[in-house]
Amino acid sequence: MRNTNLKLFNNQVIIDRILDSSFNYWSLPLIRMLEWHTFEELCCFIIKSGGYETEHSSIGPDGGIDIKIFKTSNGKQIYCGIAQCKAYCKQKIQEKQAREFLGVLMNEKLSRGFYFTASSFSEKAYNLLKNNGVIPYDGHGILKLINKIPEEKGKLYLTQLTTKDFITPVCINCKIKMTLRQNNKKGTDFWGCTNFPKCSNHYEVKDYIEILINNPD
Ligand SMILES: [Zn+2]
Image (cartoon, rainbow, N blue to C red; front, side, top):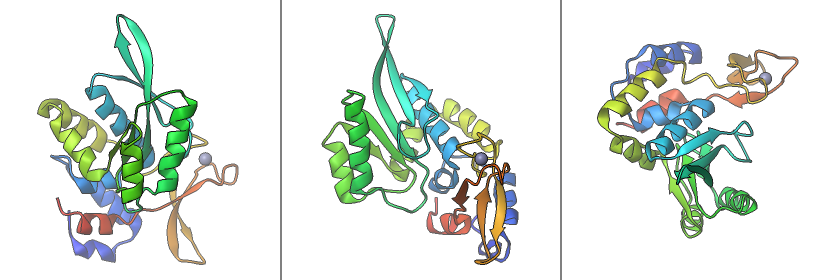
């Protein structure tokens, strides 16, 4: 996978090659390559493995509530927490984002939550979350959590996740897979909605080669 010759190819070729690869174990590069919706599904899987129920909210991927968490006590389902998910590969979670999440937590009258990012946290953001009832999990933390899940269950989910297209993002407005387009002025690729011009939503394309090279597993 960590083949620097891939630099010679365009994003579509790189993405096709990654999706054609077989993944036999969970790794940091894999977590960092996930598109936002698949990343949220992975976070749901992790939370469920801890004995909770989840409701994958449609408000995401930014702001609002990504995942609602429930526990069952004496046959009753209790709304007990929320989780924020950021499928970032590099960008650190900053204090402002941590404060926003704590605000949402307060609005929901909850005291517990999880903050998942495939990247990392600034020290201030990390401490702020930790001191206010939120457990912050960065890419390394997520990998540790997955590796604690019984091996067979973890591997089965890995197969399920990697046999689908886990790279092409879903459009938050249209709930459909996007498509790779080129910005002719800049000569760079971006993810555009297949419903364009009806929907002009677009996302940045992650640097998959950089992820593979800089996060050796
Ligand atoms: Zn769209």
